[in-house]
Amino acid sequence: MRTILYFSYGSNLLSRRIVQRVPSARFVHTATLHGYVLHWHKAGQDGSGKCDIVKTSVPGACVFGVVYELAADEKHRLDAAEGLGHGYDEMQVTLGMATGITMAWTYFATAMDASLRPYTWYKALVVAGAREHDLPGDYIDQLQRVPAVDDADADRDHLHRAIAMADARPLPYLAEALPAHRRLTRT
Image (cartoon, rainbow, N blue to C red):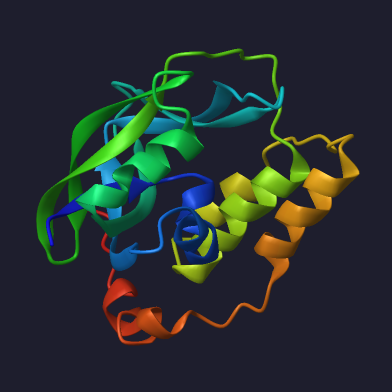
């Protein structure tokens, strides 16, 4: 089976979220994307702000995230969920991991609106994923401080909050990877 590596920095940080979208997704390692910052300005189809990575020259800037391995023949599922060609495009990025450097595919926004705010459920998914993978505490604090708005669609809100707030125990396939991911370095 041919596989690809995917770098997640938004709601797909949460393993429950990505496995719903791409059943073959397997945690590889936490990673750092240097020379980028996280923004929440991607114009979501639901009218809210979603995460995006933006290149910057600010010294020390980085985005923390997770590398997943996906079956190549399932990538179309993630492309559809993310809106590839409809607000997101893709690129390969170089990532720092405790085990070395790797290349992975990721998405970046092509439709942006700085006035948008994320829905509270979306922000909860991102924060839950960052906690699940033990990303740096100060980074999680930054995520928590992002202003968010309530979603007027109660059904959508309830559905996504349930994913974010589900039992925090890792999925079985993550159990063996957990000790390795805690070695995240801030290189």
